[in-house]
Length: 119
Length: 115
Image: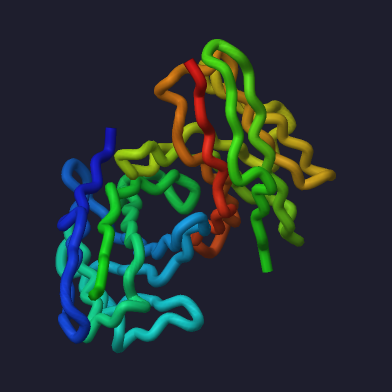
């Protein structure tokens, strides 16, 4: 089945540090990837939609300068949390849509997630 | 705006028994997709089952089946012959059929399977 790899799985760093999270589709090409944030006992909240070769589309309330997204190739999207603070601590999950998946209604494939802890 | 509600934060089931997880949603759309995703402790979300709103027949995947009640906007997941490996967080999700890839997720139900 389709595999999405997310790296790193866990990051602990000091406040003020910028952290980059990678999301790779390993066995398919993904023109569209999605970044979610998951709080404890809460749902997944879509942060942004990452489009290969173009600017990401951010959801309302998500700071684009805080959460930088780059989708440089058909298999890689990165999320950089700039100048991270403790309130940015969360579980970040990416997902990807197979470009050959047959349209809007194919399910997304999810990565394992990244636990970000800012001290 | 569409919303998805899972009113059961946690459920328990005895191994080999059947359990039903509830999900309700709100939408003004007539056509859409509904999904159940499983998130095991390893954290990778896995698609369990999918239902297309225009189909009256309830989707089934092996031990997993749904009870889709469109008028009531209800989409429950039934797990038969529960196994220890079914223990996970289960998320109900909604997606419009056109114009967007965006999923709307419920808050999840943690399922514990007791040996």
